[in-house]
Length: 411
Image (cartoon, rainbow, N blue to C red; front, side):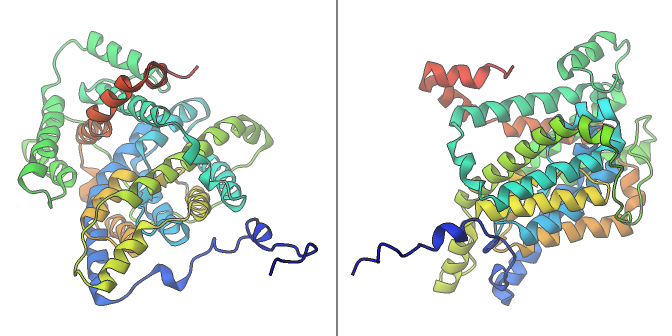
């Protein structure tokens, strides 16, 4: 029988309420067959994320400690409140590229307020159910964005690789050219650190795929620099505890100055997080046992809620800003590492943040001795891996319009 003409459907009203956007008990599976792989995956991605968190903070123009704080605080909050069962969040290269000029203009002290403002915008977008908007982005736009970010990250590391310094906010291409042109003598020690890191990260995955190559590369270079007393710049002192949450300065002048940058950061955080969650849902992952429960675990981890993901990422950046951290996004590289290590639920992402938290409280001394050139090497290899030659070739060969969208920079 058809519904009466006067009846009012209830589903449209549900779409604009917070229902379904909050954590629930079904997000976790504490059975030993799932709990063990989740903890192992969290440990694995934690040691991989440690050097990346330090490097992306430096690339953003802030202290390396800020990267650690962001990885811990934002990583836990996004894992608990986000819409993906397997996504790992924290500081990323794309966000570092956007934040660096903001830091150069307004100073590092503006970053916590920027995180608060951007996080609030992303949170509102999630509550407004705007998560599916990212599905309308054309494929060439996404690939062109990734290619541009990778190039900027690589160029930003050239001064560090040559042991030179450039003024904050300098165009990355001009800074790289100036560093190469102005460098009189060759900084053999710094270049050696970069070369060793790159060699380990490129060769080790082919020999021992289960070993975290970036972490081992940093350990090897740091140990050699200490034993040989190499004259290379180090990270320096790091805090041995999380900072106390503080509301940053919210003067009207600073709020007005950061309004446009906060909108850009929020858009990037939303797009990158949703794209990462979307890609993660399609990545292959191991199943411990080929039984119905194992298959249910795998199918369950493939699903994600884009609206809840925005809510989680918004809350993650808000919380990170209160602790003095950076805006955070979902990180596809770290998520992929977690999945390959056997992650099935969001407990793996929580464990990854707890591993980095343990480093803050127990191992800041050794971490402070890491050469800056080692982080530059990690970022150079990471930037190179962000580019898929096969995908770029496919876009260039598809249509002339797609090729132009890929290679023409935005105005």
